[in-house]
Length: 302
Image (cartoon, rainbow, N blue to C red):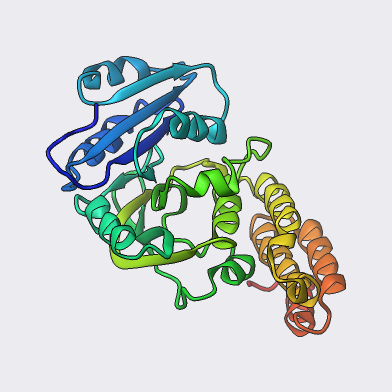
């Protein structure tokens, strides 16, 4: 249920949950512990078959819970947006969690800067045992975030657990793309970046928990989705950048996945991706691609 202690804008926290029993309690507790008081928390139980539902029953008095058949992450987020009442929407994946001042700091940014439509925070990445893995920093530049996302797809720290957005943005850019089976968050940030400004709070208030066997470890699935996202959003760039710039960005994406494929033991796939990347951008990325190609042929570490 939304709290009423504050006269400030209401924030809707949307937590999609699918078989999240081991960690859903931590996510909900971190949302409840936020210092920003005027909030509602919506958990979309997306067809879980474990104990997620029974755990959520303990929060029925303070959290709005919606049970539905499994529809996927985008569908669950979209259900949350439709059911929410907040002026601002904040997303939190069920296996991640927040530091207490995250919402407060983000509300301050959006409330005081009407030109900024969405924001995130620096993030910490850890394993399930809370061992520090790395820091997910803010972008070095936030002035041209659309081009930055094309060049570095994961540049928005925290991504699906870090972003807070003005609700009215979804009326402009639409909802999460339910045809994508991964990287729907990057697709959304691209669309938002085409119509509004972005800001990142350089304080690690979001914690990303890297689970073994997570979606991000499926390189083929991620590559297929990123290929779709890069192609479908090409038109968002200024006309002058839909040619050489986009081809260089697309080539860079293929090169990144080539390196991942090689490290995962798929040498032939890595070489194929490098060849495709070279064909798209021989002048901008050719030297790097040829260097990687020969390193892979010689079985060197990259």
